[in-house]
Image (cartoon, rainbow, N blue to C red):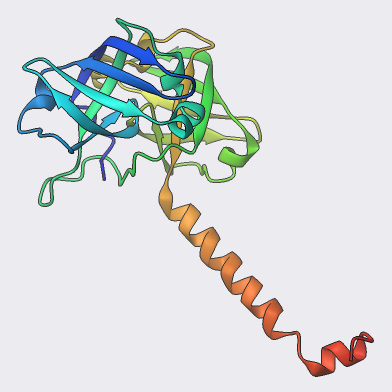
Length: 216
């Protein structure tokens, strides 16, 4: 689990792509502290397992499903990425609970300055927008942010100067692809409600129902 509070901006040292998967070496400093093989690091919001470590880099293997579902498939050497180590029990939870399991991708469609903040508009699919609510939480490339606006085709977040300085979001151009993870609470509630609804339907099918509809 993560918090969406980016600890460091890393840089892709190399990326070796297979047919569908990839091996990525990432240059970093802070997130390497106390990190060991097998630990998880959020990389642009994607939970990845550390397979090799040097004094200034770590290596991850990215499977085909992750490449399809995230913007890791468009990374190139020297690209900057947001990094965060897994949440340590007892630490302050400054953002929100983030699993590192990406729901899909969005596209930055507009930037707009307002005093000391920058509004970022992101377009994405209806399948993702259904879980995004105004004043709810969203993770964009591993950054925990508050949704300030949402409609049927886009949502918006407002970026303060600190977030601008410590993350890559405002360094991207309009048209850039970003990873999105919706607040997991909404997904669990939907799953529970659907399961309850399906159970009610099944319970309603008995011998009387079958007889009334000509099946018995």
